[in-house]
Amino acid sequence: MDRLKVLKTYKIYIGGKFPRTESGRYYTPTSGKGEALGNICLSSRKDVRNAVVAARKALGDWSERAAFNRSQILYRIAEMLEGRKEQFTEELVFQGLNAKQAKNEVELSIDRLIYYAGWCDKYQQILGSVNPVASSHFNFSNSEPMGVVGIITEGGTSLLSLVSLIAPVIAGGNTCVVLASEEKPLCAVTFAEVLHSSDVPGGVVNILTGQRNELIKPLAEHMDVNAIANDTRDKEVTLMLEESSVGNLKRIRSYDLNWEKYESQHLHLISDFQEVKTTWHPIENIGGASSTY
Image (cartoon, rainbow, N blue to C red; front, side, top):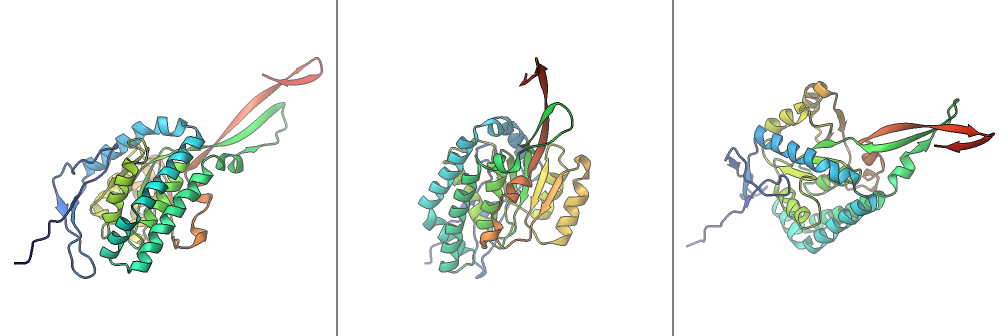
């Protein structure tokens, strides 16, 4: 008799843990050949809320860490992904890529993490400025993380698009809630296992699987989510995001990039989720000399 294959049950990732969805539901996506990919959690609105709470709780510690330490952690993610390169390649092939495409996507994902690890302690110098003013003040502009960022990924490059959006968001000191590709979710949940063993504090990255149309609205409407990074090319999804996000004036960034191109990695993907804080510092004149206090 042919052996019945035991499908892996892929859990979601919230607050550094791997719970099952509170709804108790799951779905079974299939590959291009009709093979079942696994038992995937169908996340609910409650899971979205739990993930946002975890992301907000982790924000203070993560945003206040030294930029060099965030750089070390992103580099560690790349190291762990390098060590599991064969597993991710197999999953990408299982989801429909050929071996060459799969290997290229994993290697690009590793390189992208290292690219943004290098920016962690440099982007402030590029984005910040000392501004000329007409009064006796120093005027400085510095970048600060926006807060909790929702990330909606598209299924075309299930690993590379995921990494290409998570890396700049957390490099800039933000935390995030990720809606994984509905059609090709395997690499997203396996990537959560990499994050779990890579010194990333629990709650910095939270990954949910399920039906995109069911999860987008509660994520976009959530008042504790500060911005959305949208990688889908669906105009209806973009419109839904814009309409649902007006409650707290979320910043919506929709990307139509080929993540395999070198030009798709850029400082702007960090600055898109930064707020500019301007500080005025008075200058005191004492005996004709200029000094600060």
